[in-house]
Length: 341
Image 1 (cartoon, rainbow, N blue to C red):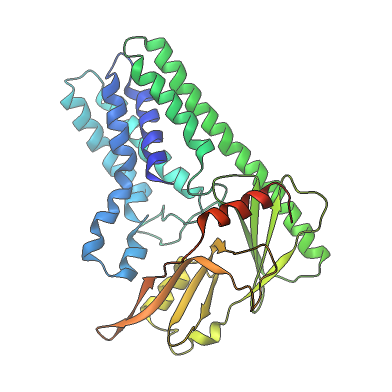
Image 2 (tube, rainbow, N blue to C red):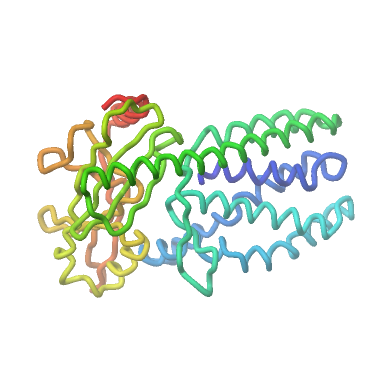
């Protein structure tokens, strides 16, 4: 999730575990810092090439073994620093809860998180939340704000902070339920339209859990469709995105291509505009100029794409920046969310 959400969640968990009569607002400050700690893995980027950066982010710093080793050490330091106002055991378990919930909500997104590093580089993702979702974050911020200004009213600060955590948790449960309903709609529509596929994934569109996107893999590419909980009975339309894997024939064994395919969980395509070789990851969605069917005259642009370029005799990926009218794109998402075709 985004940094604001991670910091807010960390602060709310810290307030629940060490706040109130123990550390007061200092607990919130600890939570803000520790809630962002795992994402500081990006500080290593200057010493990593572009492939290693992709491999490193959400890696060992998001693993169970890191939580297990770091929590008691940091907890001991907090207890010593505050001269026993919070016990080592309570501080250690609170730190573990902060790190665990950070990783957990990352797992809820499409990006994928290597929870089992260094024993496995499998990226885990349940795809039930977009990476930024205000309806998850706002209750946490409201609860924390009231807690911060209720310095000595321990009953008030505890209840408001807990309310924020509960409401955000309920929203997560809602997202799983909404995803299950959307999946049934997508599966039914694919079978009714006779579209054969080998596997399929779904995820919410930006900032909501009302409009969902499905990506179904076939032999030569992907069928992408959208369904809104506010849709009428209009059948779901699926558009085809070709994989074009043959364009990677000369580079298929390079480190860059192998790791980009790994990162995309196999939901990739290749394109070659001019002399550039581009690999796109379609899990995150596409940029459209209209809701017209995709095709040669209305090609999609992947939100995540890399251009491969030679550097010191090795192919390395460089992120492709997409020029997009954000206002128009959000309007399209809103219209489709409201059930417009």
